[in-house]
Amino acid sequence: MTDKSKIYEIVKTMLADRFGMQESYVKSDLAFSTFGADSLDVVELIMELEDIFNIKIEDEKIGELTTIGDVVSYIHEKTSKDN
Image (cartoon, rainbow, N blue to C red; front, side, top):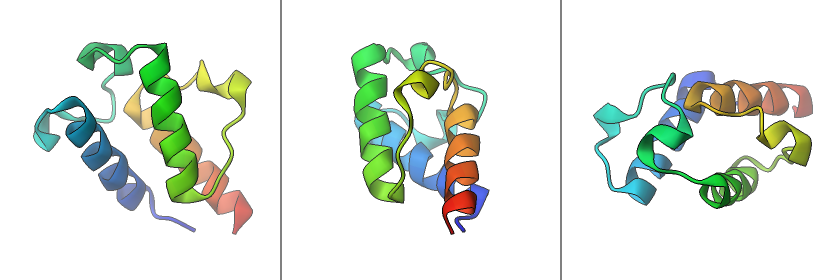
């Protein structure tokens, strides 16, 4: 099982690197659209997260993951079930 805070740190670092912003700006309630991520960006992020956490995020679920917190919670849920 992966701790939620560890998941958040990984996601935060990845987003900050990808979008060229300071990690302190990345908060769990921040929507992907806030920092200019379009649907293709979100899909690419999801694919990268699937690889990092060795999970599969269903296509129909991707549209529901609108904030960083949504993604972190979903990954936590998936990694908790799978282990």
